[in-house]
Amino acid sequence: MSFTADIGRQLLFLLQPETAHGLAIRALSAGLVPAPPPVRDKRLETRVANLILPNPIGMAAGFDKDAEVPNALLQLGFGFVEIGTVTPKPQAGNPQPRIFRLPEDEAVINRLGFNNRGHEAALARLKKRSRRAGIVGVNIGANKDSDDRVADYAAGIKTFATVADYFTINVSSPNTPGLRDLQARESLAELLKSVTAAREAAASITGKRLSVFLKIAPDLDEAALDDVAEMALAHAIEGVIVSNTTLSRAGLTNSDKARETGGLSGRPLFERSTIMLARLRRRVGTSLVLIGVGGVDSAEAALTKIKAGADLVQLYTGLIYRGPAIAHDITKGLVDRLDADGVAVIADYRDTEVDAWADLALTA
Image 1 (cartoon, rainbow, N blue to C red):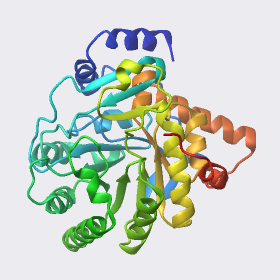
Image 2: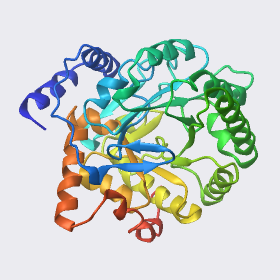
Image 3: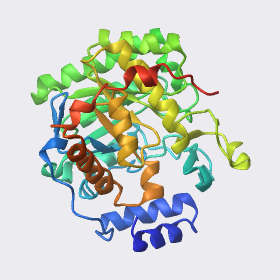
């Protein structure tokens, strides 16, 4: 991290997290965020699920909930960006304060609750963006007060089919009561059936069949992970994102903040999410696309995710602690590693440490 970026981060950390986040969005929108030029190297190019990505490092959902700055994020060097989570109707989310930084652990606890301005606002912005800037996925969710949450997800597919490059079905946020119940076998089967039907209906109109990814929690037990693997394969979705935030507080040094409710992200999530990633890879074999998320803040962490089974990697909390150059720094580090190891393409690292990670024990 440069001296200037470090000073900027320290100033932002003097503000409440949501205030700082709002300023970051406005600065990106105004083109005021400095970043090194993107790293261009064909060895980083990744082709998965009908997508061609310049590198495998993506911006996870949660930062740009309302599709305000996807192209600005791509210009920071990310290979792809995911906006949302977006719900059909606007909703305020949970009461503030609802984001808590844990600098000692390089972590964040949030209980936002899908705060966003709804489908129509995000759709209007995505219609205006230049698609040539890069790949942008749409992360869709259900309203807290919805009478039919499955229908909310199908509505998201229909709404964004002409502007999305892929979809993520978020059933794993811990901050909407009952949402994680959609990961249960019968509920998940119903949801994926509805979502894929909506995808096919949209494809018949647009002529383009978009990929669908399922985002799961890192707190699933072995039986639930079996169900996720079976349902993902049975319903022919393209992949799974492992993982969302965790309810675990294992390893935190800040005991006061650890008592806050919500999902934990950042460095403490790295081990748990990577173990779950590897265990899912072992279940689904080589064909399903897996995206590794949780505690990624360096080239080493990103490469570890790939070795544990990830085709692509996403981050968010790492941006908070490492600053806007993080995508550049990670991709530059990956190129350096390719050079040092004499590896032809980044995908050649995939799955080389699946068993080593899958066999590790999870901490409480």
